[in-house]
Image (cartoon, rainbow, N blue to C red; front, side, top):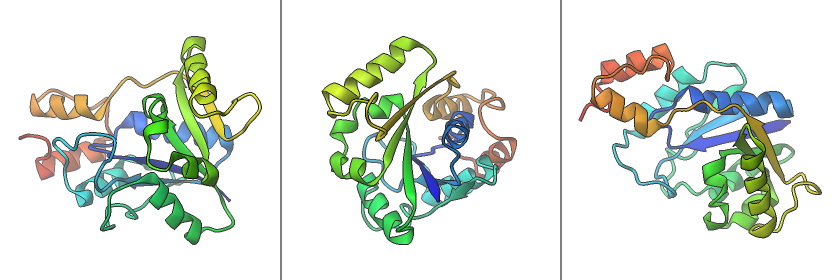
Length: 203
């Protein structure tokens, strides 16, 4: 089985996250994509971070396609959310399956700073979504070759997928909610209703 892994803070999840997962589902014919909210984000400041329970619920509302499976593997853990730990756990759960780690271009360009990044590369294929232009793809390919020592033309350990981006960020959504501005086009309607009921991101 081919399993995609889509991790992140998801504070909150938005349509760009969903698009990212579906893009690689289609490109790689993935059997499922496991969506994993982080307990303690290691690459970002945890400003305005709502509970793991809230983020799991929002993910279940946002990622509606049957290919998605929401996992609490990190939010229930007692340790920090390092991708290498999560992969090790998933390898134990699915020893015969192939893993595809789905990330955005911004995270990929600091991939050499990730904890035990070489071990991550040994356990999965890293899938990067690039902006739909040659300049963006070329920058990612140069980084892969120069910094990670992987030639994307000769190796399938890193897959770069140029697509039209969905211009949105969780930071922008939180600010818009705080400013009482509309976010209907950015998040799922059921998720937005949950955010309103719970009063999230208003403080």
